[in-house]
Amino acid sequence: MESLKQLGIQTILGERVMTWPEHPEIVDGKVKTLVTSTGRVLTAEMVLPCTGQKPHVALMAAFRPEVISTTTGRIRIHPTLQVDNSSSNEQEAEDLSHIFACGDCAESGAIQAGHTAYWQGQQAAQNIVKMIANKEVLLAGPLGEYKPTHPAIKVTLGRVSNSVYCQTMADRPSITASSPMPTVPVLPERGSRIFQFLSCGKYIRTVA
Image 1: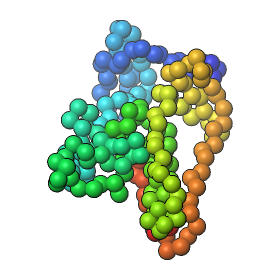
Image 2: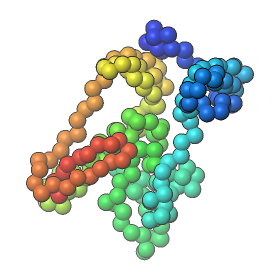
Image 3: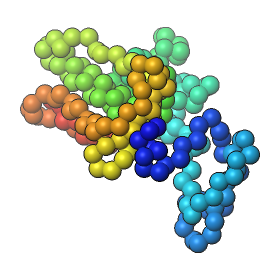
Image 4: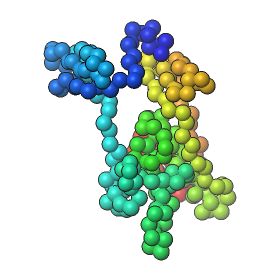
């Protein structure tokens, strides 16, 4: 939080916006006013609402509605990020192990955030590579499992730095630092196929 204060950014935690201005994201010369759950009144030239998102599961819901959680509206998955079809009739259940779900649409137990989708996409890509290798009798080993990390939010501060706020502050305090993203190991090209993960916008080239 200290890094945000140094930039003159005021951070308010533990409050919800109860009253939103009309056309909050349009700069039209009008003062935008919003009211929080504590009665705090805030004004600005522009307000960017970042709440109320819903997972986009229409494609999977039309294909196999039984894999959509009735409580969260997300796609049920195994720890390997493969779609979980176990609640269906075992005699009629179709093997969906070749379908992966990542990001906000997946019932993973993690928060909805870009970094969550990134790490899930990386794990899914590694598992796809292993599935292809196992099929070719290369014995790449069992599939890896995704494990949610501590809830955190990152705010970009310029081109090379960011501020990360983590819920478990005791073992990971708020930090400001450059954070280069790691790369995903892939197999060399050989009759390759491209898998696209819409959740993180990365193209992973693997051996088909």
